Length: 239
Image 1 (cartoon, rainbow, N blue to C red):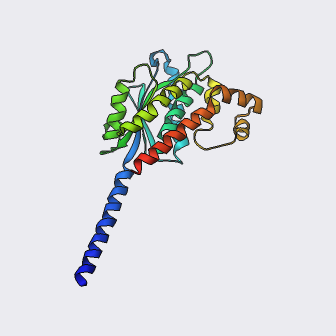
Image 2: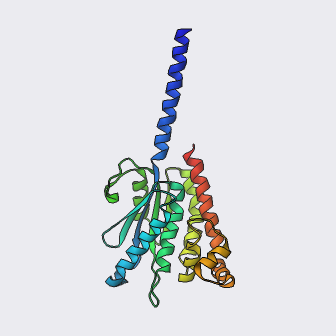
Image 3: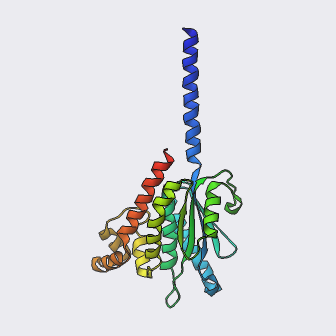
């Protein structure tokens, strides 16, 4: 009986250790966004700080939802680590929206190519660009082959990539056509859910004006796309 109790205690300890290890592994799955500004050589140096401020403001907006940080490098490139991968796609779209809505009048719309990689982070340094892991490699490799696309999502799961790939192409096409006002109205909904009435009031727009820009920006479709991604992420991480 004593031996049986010892075995039961050992099995229980093994199960608790296994659960703990699994939780630690799951907690290391993060999102990494690799990006660079499009046509950055055409952006005058006096606007560079405006761009940096726009990106940093976007990151700060998401900080109540998830630990998140950004690092600029080579002048026009950047990487972002999003600790909670379920928020990584919304953050990527918000970065593009923030750039577009921050564009000064009479200038070509600012935008960026973004590659989102989801996976393990095996080494995280204070400097993002010297960190390493599956998420970094997926993000970097996909960025190298991004071509004319401006948004791409890569994960370790082939079925996930197939499921998200086509809808990402449609979403990318929509985002790439946003005007400043369209980017503004959609960006207001990317962090926290709000009613259209509240968003219109927050932006100082009439309901009619807000609804016009929201509809033309396909705002609800973008929110549905983000929710679809989030449901897939949660399902695959829990496997």
